[in-house]
Length: 108
Image (cartoon, rainbow, N blue to C red):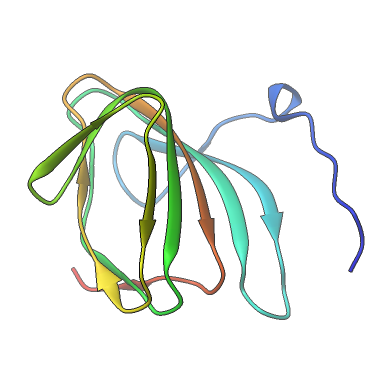
């Protein structure tokens, strides 16, 4: 495996399939599907419930976000175990670091 070094400030935010949600891809492994991204949500944006076959790691960089029924503020780290699923919503806007060992599966 080769080392990866990226200045995320030099990347543009790219719209995703979800309205009001943008992505900066930091790593995308074409062999395993593993990826690391920054996600930026506008206020009142939502990502419908995906399932994480191999788990998911999230770090809240800015704002606050709700996963299912729990709110998380900036500075919070979350690990979701393999097979977990949750939707994400923010009322204020948020920026998240997300790492997935395998691609998620859309449930909605």
